[in-house]
Image (cartoon, rainbow, N blue to C red; front, side, top):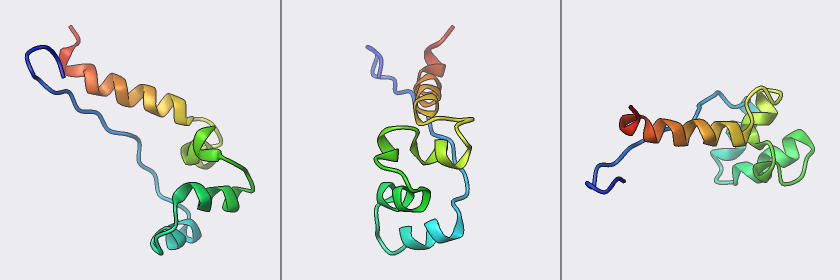
Amino acid sequence: MNQKGEIGLGGGHRLQLPGEVAKELRTGKELGDIIDRWAGGTDIKKKEGTIGILTHNHITRTKMFEDVVICSFARFMK
């Protein structure tokens, strides 16, 4: 929000989850726990993120959030 009270919005990338991951997610489990088990990692949600795992780090969690922040400020850029 700027000083005039105007709000900027941005959104993250979306991608299709593997069927077995989506199935577990629909049971109410947390994606971070599911992806750790599925990918054989630990704390993936704090590292490369699910996006990094599924895109083989072509898009990382950090890069995705950078893009989201840029998108949220886009309406204020000149």
